[in-house]
Structure formats: C-alpha cells, structure tokens
Image (cartoon, rainbow, N blue to C red; front, side):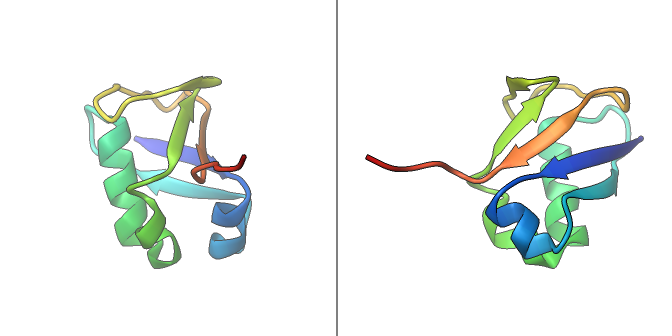
Length: 81
C-alpha cells in the first residue's frame, strides 16, 4: 500500500519537503509505517520514536491499522510552558 504522509514543523525541515511517499505491506499499521519511514528517510530516523501520528485528523496509536485512503500527518513532539 502506498501512503502520502504530510510533515510539519521540524520534520518538514529535516526531510526538505512537506510530504513523502511510503510503501508499506498489508496489513499496514502506524508502527509499520514509522518503521518504513525510518529506513527510507534517514533524516527522519532519529525522530520517529517521539513523533505524533494523525490519521484522518485524530491521533493514532502504533497498532492502529491504516489504509491508503487515510490522511496521515506527522508532528514533532510539542513542549512549552
């Protein structure tokens, strides 16, 4: 399955683009997608453990199943005070 993944903030800067294409075997999960991203996009490898994943505008857990029609976005961790 092929996914278009939207990147924001420092992830966008590290990748040099605002979206990437990732191919994941079925059944695809958020965890499998992140694993593929870390191997295909070395500039993002150090951040894949701590990022927030949104699937169809809702935050997702690693075990969540995803389909190619889903809108997927990655966000770096947010902190502040």
